[in-house]
Length: 215
Image (cartoon, rainbow, N blue to C red; front, top):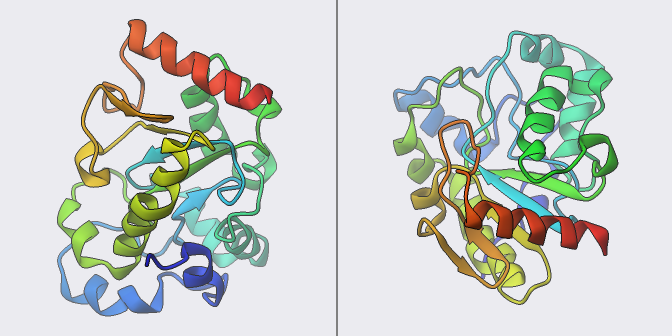
């Protein structure tokens, strides 16, 4: 039985820079994570979103350090980790809004119209300027919880057609094959910028996402 990821993070306070289960691994294993920032395994209403996008890990920007040191920023991260928050406003996290807005364009979706209906799930919760720590995803307890929950809960929902799940990064990490769909679980060919390659597959998945958001 997979751990509930929302319960798993529920007692982690907003000012915490890591999940307590990860502390030993983070400090004894070499990694390039920016641990001055706050962890973010998801953004948006992951509990209920009809569309979930799978990513690798959150990117790092200098403004993340400002978030980590402010009560408002800490509250924002804690709320996002509940899986019940909308995607952020520009005031809450402008750089993240810009990134997500660009990602959603490939589906023909306007960010401001779907903030309460799209979520992003990261395999890793910790930020880095350029992710080069794949070995940490198998070592970190929090990443193992995310991957297990995805396999046993989220992917099952997608296979039953209850949600549309699109893998935009790290197919192997998520245990998916490129170009293969299982019900509403899709793993299209993408580039490193998390953009689907042009073609019939992209058009088919974009249509499925739009249909799910129109319900």
